[in-house]
Amino acid sequence: MLPINILTSHAAPLDISNIDTDQIIPKQFLKRIERTGYGEFLFFDWRRIQEGPQAGQPDPGFPLNQPEYAGAKILVAGKNFGCGSSREHAAWALTDFGFLAVIAPSFADIFFSNAGKNGMILVKLSEDDVNTLTHRSLERTDHTITINLEAQTVTDDEGFSASFEVDPFRKYCLLNGLDDIGLTLRHEVALDSFEAKHDAEFWTLPVPASA
Image (cartoon, rainbow, N blue to C red; front, side, top):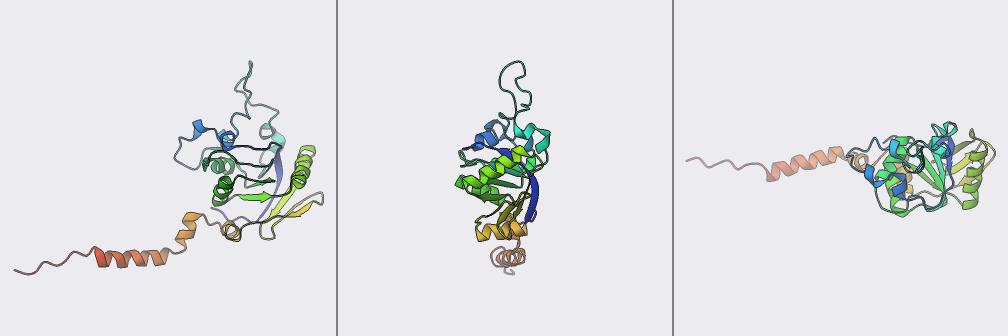
């Protein structure tokens, strides 16, 4: 997991509340055992026309299909983002697509935990603040937002400024690029020493007595 602190990017606006994990990454794509390769299936049903002669083709009205929002690292969405089932694949799909942060009024608890463990900054702002950023990103596709994790602030190129709360432990992990495995490996020397001692005490075969 890469360290992350200051993130500056244009944002993809998705003004929808209660976006559940089955829309973020539909269940039929959960067969992979890797964490990568899910980005192409992000919002799969919404990104494609569902009916008519063009069914299955990209929907030009969906923000993630619009070239103006290509490469956006920040997603601005409605309240209760990531509700539904607890699949960690939702976080994998977002990061694999290129998103490093989501700004929303609220998040589902399990998704909030999963995303943080996978290197994403999740920013809770008031509905009014989120609406402001959403509308500015809709009006100006070059609208730029900066998230400063160390300072816990969100600013933009039009003078917007707001602060957000973040769990100190999660903040530490994100700033230092530490997922659960990385946290464990900080104690690699002590773990190796314990394993060596354990093996010496419990797995050394007794020397047979001489006849």
